[in-house]
Image (cartoon, rainbow, N blue to C red; front, side):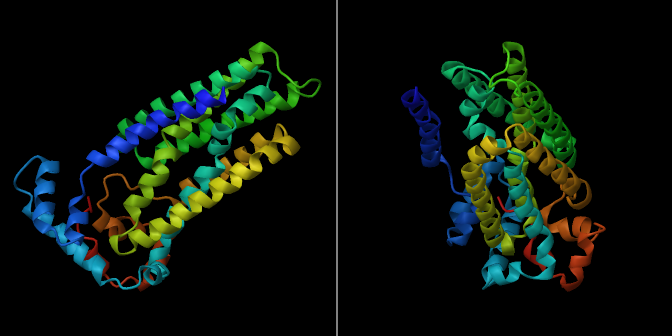
Length: 314
């Protein structure tokens, strides 16, 4: 029942609490608070070697450059800051318009709609949750081997097929009744799992990874604030609207999300550059200035950012 469902949510929360207690501060965070000796010690522990002086100097230079930015939100509005800002925000918006949170939030209701009883619908939602967890591991393994764009585009194809197939099954077979036969209901669960699987190794983790690779240090705080705010806003909108949309649109709700997935694929294909193995201090020269669209936004880039962005902040 609902008591068990709510109670089980405390288990991952307990792990997060323990992790928050034992996690160490980053070297950059310690340097920013004028604890340089502790920052150097932490960096040596993270790297597992003693010779980290060059990297530590880069971190100090980057932190100093970040302190010089008095108004990060004003800097964020510069024309040369638009490419990472647009990509960071749109990754969050598109992440929600895959329909993933709507499906995960309301999985029991969705499965009851296609004919499962209460216990079976709860079990099916647990299965999709486990698929989500284990498929995320694929992203950890493959993101630096396959590349960001390939994972995102592959997922768009798989999610589009899954969404349209679910929509087609419900559209055809729910016309005369309010439930599906057992075989088709099982097929819907499989398709939902395929959808969740593709999201979990692509738009789920990469929606956060890609902005972290594209925002330069001087606008990282303000840029991430905009990106996270976009994520929370559209999570709220989708969560509030999904049940009403499902009641009114019925099977067409899946075609609605499938259309958004097409838009996402086009965005990745034409506007999202590959950031695999690109250091953050090389983003301007190797990515933005080489991209056929984003290079037009670099006309007010004065080159000083190359000094500010030296090194990847840990």
